[in-house]
Image (cartoon, rainbow, N blue to C red; front, top):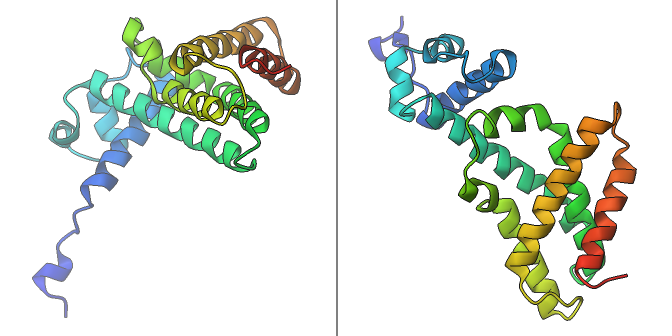
Length: 199
C-alpha cells in the first residue's frame, strides 16, 4: 500500500527543469530558427505548462541569451581543457592549443552559434565582452609576465586576435566546401604567435 506522498508526482529540481527548457529551445531553434519558434512550442517540447517557462525566463530573447552564455561556457571549457594538456611553462604550446581549440570548437557548433548570436543584430558590447576574450587576455598576460612573449596590452591583443580568429573561421566556412581544419588551425596559430612576438 502506498502513502499519499509516495503516489504524488515528484517535482523536478529547478536546475533540471530550466535545463530541460533550454534543451527544448535549442532543438527548436536549430530546426525552425528563433523567430519562428514560440514559447508554447518550447514548453510543449519540454512537457511543462506555459507558466513554468516564466519562472525561469522573461522572454524568448532571455532563453536565447541563456543559451548563448551556456554556448560560450562550454566552448571555453573545451579550450581550457586543451590548454591544460600542455605544460604550465610551455607558453607557445598553450597559445597554439588555445587558438586551435577555439577554431575547432567554433566550427563544430557554427550553426548553433549563428542562431544564438545572429538572431538579433549583434551589439558592439556583445562582440568584445565575452569570457573567451577574457580568458585569452589572461593567457597573454600570464605569458608576458613570464617573459615568454612581448605583449604590451594583453586585453587589446586578445580582442584583436579573437576577432581575427572568428573572422578567419567564418571565411573558411564560407569559401571551402570542406574546411581543412589542420591547415586553418596552423594558419591561425602562426598569426597569433607572430602577434605575440614569436617566430
